[in-house]
Length: 162
Image (spheres, rainbow, N blue to C red):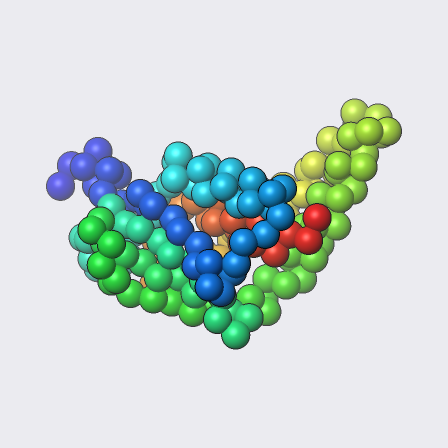
């Protein structure tokens, strides 16, 4: 398989949220979720180790406060599911939301250098959470740091209280 062919197969082509476990939310939260899904689908690198079944679909659900990731083949048939405890991400999510709130507040009143410093902190937390996702799913799902960042953005959008 050529590099271009591999890239076209090793990707997500659909992401759905399980409405039974996640549910609908406010218009603002739904908008954030849709943007996160759009960004993830726009550019990603996603594969199952040892399988050549892509491109893939991803169904996300919450089960007993855990993140359920069901990977589907192109036709929508289930391939594998992974249940991921959110406990290791909780502190990062809390810190990330705090920094995001600080960032949005700073945009209105702070100096550009202050806004940039807050944004650097936000990006560092985002990278730390993405790296944690990569480590926690190692050997189960292969994705690059940019895809992990986009998945964390979606996880954050699912938990956003804003």
